[in-house]
Length: 335
Image (cartoon, rainbow, N blue to C red; front, top):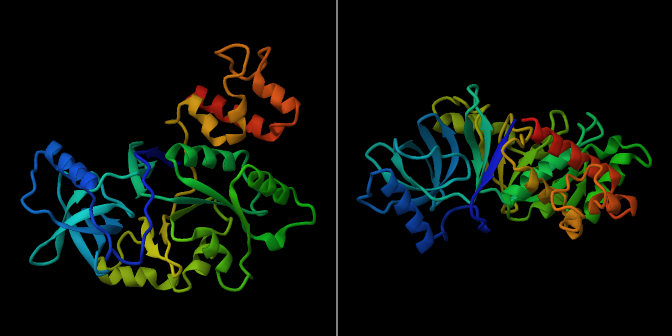
């Protein structure tokens, strides 16, 4: 289970290095505020960098010149993860991460003790992957959309393993319905040459792939990063024989200029942190009818004068999406 929280939305275009990045005055104030609240006023400004991966009390960072360095972490820092923007200071042996720039969003999941831990930060795009096999779990896509919308992260849908689709497959029609709602969509499969279809969808965004096990996320990563199979070996050389490389989130630059955060085990979004009234954010077609119910406290079940049920009856909202909405809200009501 994975959950999310969002901070201020701030879109940034990334390049393959940090060469042209400069801290804004606002970022500097946030960094100073974080250090001040930790009771550790900085003696130096530090240099900007981005976290590539986190290994215990160390982080593999990329400097603005494109070099990679394994740095120690200041004890007071909030846990840095892949995608975090940081300030670091050189030391005699390596370096130290001195400050964490305020995130615009963060993905989290519970640890074995049930405490929320960050997984990846500063995401622009969530690629929701599903396929004919295994059959999609009930309303899983809609739960992803609720999470993405509440994070203020763009969501796009990828129907993978399209070579397994039967004529007039319901999944293809389902993808069309999401496209009609304004979501970007893609139909693809592993036999397609290259990755031009994927790179056109991604652009220069920082993305994370989500989807249930077996839908082919690894094959999509392999198409985007043909040399991905060597990444564990490359990281091992830098990060002490590859410890945690199969379980920690890792950031990779894509040939087209985007960035991929690959996080094994990130397969689902728990929505227990989401307020029931914000579930509407993942159902954008409901927007014209909100506030139109006869009763202000309408629960959109069997109340008379419900604008949403009327919209379903009139064909303005699909019955499948409306039932999905009800199921998600009912789940939150019992947690």
